[in-house]
Image (cartoon, helix red, strand yellow):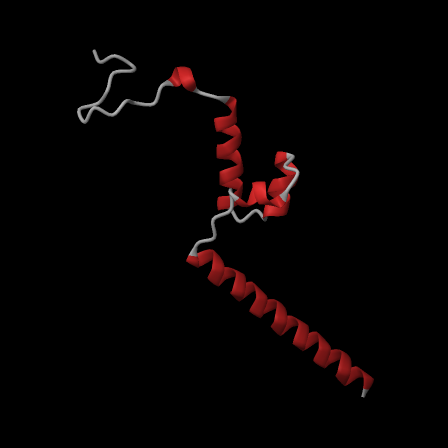
Length: 92
């Protein structure tokens, strides 16, 4: 039976459950919030950070998220133009 904290074949030490910190759960939670597109301001509020800079470390935009952001902007802009056209048509 292998020892819990014995090094692996490459000599790398395995994670040591004795060094587990509650902070690790907090970090994982905040990172996962960032991964599901939670904005940094919401993460800041949840975490109690005093500056947005602290919260930004948990948000890592991927290419897919960037494309999605522009798609949402395009949808918003099209809806805005459509509603403006309807308003202008009703005035005339």
